[in-house]
Image (cartoon, rainbow, N blue to C red; front, top):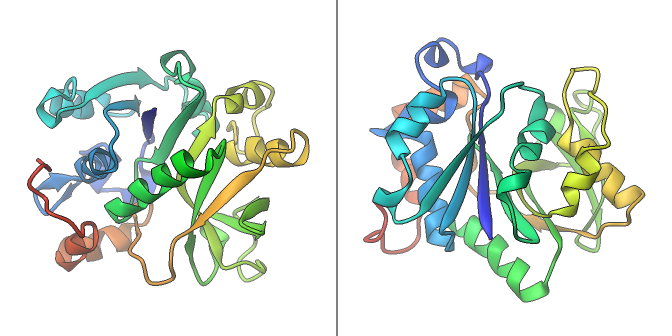
Amino acid sequence: MKAVILCAGLGKRLRPYTDTYQKSMILLHSKPLLEYIINGLIYAGFKSVIIVVGYRKEQIIEYFKDGNEWGIKIEYVEQKVLNGTGGAVLVCEKLIQDSHFFLTWGDILVPYYIYKDVFAIFKKENQDFILVTNYTADPYKGGAIYYENDLLVDIIEKPPKGKSKSNLNNCGIFIFSSEIFEVLKTLEPSKRGEIELTEAIRIGINIRKWKIRIFKMEKNQFRGDFGDITTYEKLCENSSWVSKLVNYNEDHIK
């Protein structure tokens, strides 16, 4: 199974840092954010990674090259039109020959064992779809998740502040069946001018009757969201969070 990382965006909310850096290449204690994500995927057992690039793509390509230095294979695909997460996923279709793929946003960090546990559930339970959630006081900045019996029943993108009845947020980590491409290709751009991945998910559960397994991160588990400049600056000031990424011997991590 290939892992896909979405790294094409402009990173407007991280300016002025992203005036110089691609968002996924901003430095955190001498490493780019993207390197932490890739190390986590290596820990989980992934050997092949697709990186969706766009804005300042040369920074990513020149740093990671073909992935050989990390012991993995890296392929690049460009999202020439920044038309949302759904559009970013669609440009990967020709590079994904397997029946399933792993997906993560390129601007979030979670403990490495989250990647490993999700992959293990896929293999053990033979799930076609898995969506990871994290706890939040109010998911108005992300996607509110509603579920029953560990299966997704609804996802509400950016609900009004204070109105959500769920404290679970779409974390930005998934396993998808390649059937997601069929749905994405039917979508028209939203009011934001984007192909919305969340809309494809809603069509999947409501019309195609997909069973999407929910994987819930615990309330106190670390999640770094680099769509928020305050979060980034706090994580730059303190390195204690780095130990929360790993709970194993790091000898094989570059």
